[in-house]
Image (cartoon, rainbow, N blue to C red; front, side, top):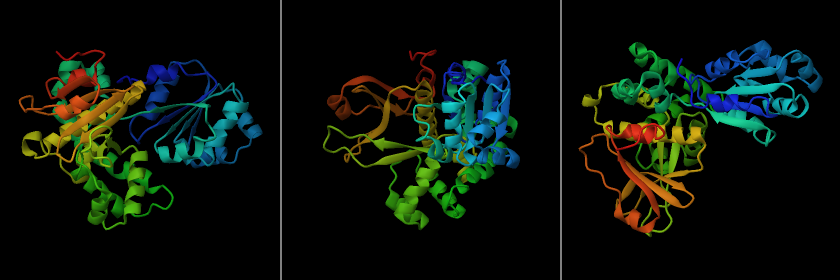
Length: 381
């Protein structure tokens, strides 16, 4: 098994008086992670699955007395696919407030459902984690650095979902299945979302603009949907862990673009599956976009898993000066450019350097990226 970065931290939170909530897209290994942690514990576990009709009914209308009776003799309650259970937030709240001796751990593949139903009622009563497709560091620890670097092209094309990463022979078929039925199922189960054709059209439009500035008005024109619908659907895609956004950074320079935004996919394989392009790098015209998407997504997975207090942006001016990724930590800035080819020239804008307090700059390419994505172990030379 490939060890997950957040596993030790989650294990340390057991029986601290709070529920443990793990979010993430389908097939990222949430259930597997929990089961591995539970395997190493001696407590008795009651398992409830929101996909099971009987389990769903069992919890859905339960009172405090019924819940107490349900978990009698158990130390841990593991609720999988918790977002499918009615009033899940209040159910978990009953445990954290009134059945404190039982540790609740819940997973949900759709943050919009589980967060929406539980975040207010569980304020101060939960530890929250997000499980993404495998991180570079996790794969390095499993395969070793030389082997993982040799798989770089595979990661750029097929991504790092667990089943894909451990089954390269069937990578194309697996990621097509994940990016089709699994992800769309989560999106379409949301209330009032019925237009699967629009979701597909919007995803394709975002794929072709990954790493570029995105205009909601342009997306509206491309899809034929009004701007309000586009904004709503994009938020759904973000909550479903398919895409994420970087906002444009602006503070000191008059020519900085203030309202711009860029969208990336959490997994390159999903991006490529949406447009049906699994061609090798030498046959592609979008290698630069693939590289930028991969590096930015991996970096954000790392930062979020470490729970660093860092704000992330991109930077661009009306004079076409740009920086792919800006990280701000307590008023200090790091600036990074992504260039797949080490021979390709890359510069950090002098305008940005002159106007902000800079702590670090780097051009991230295929020869030095290991230090950027796993800094605890590999330092750039």
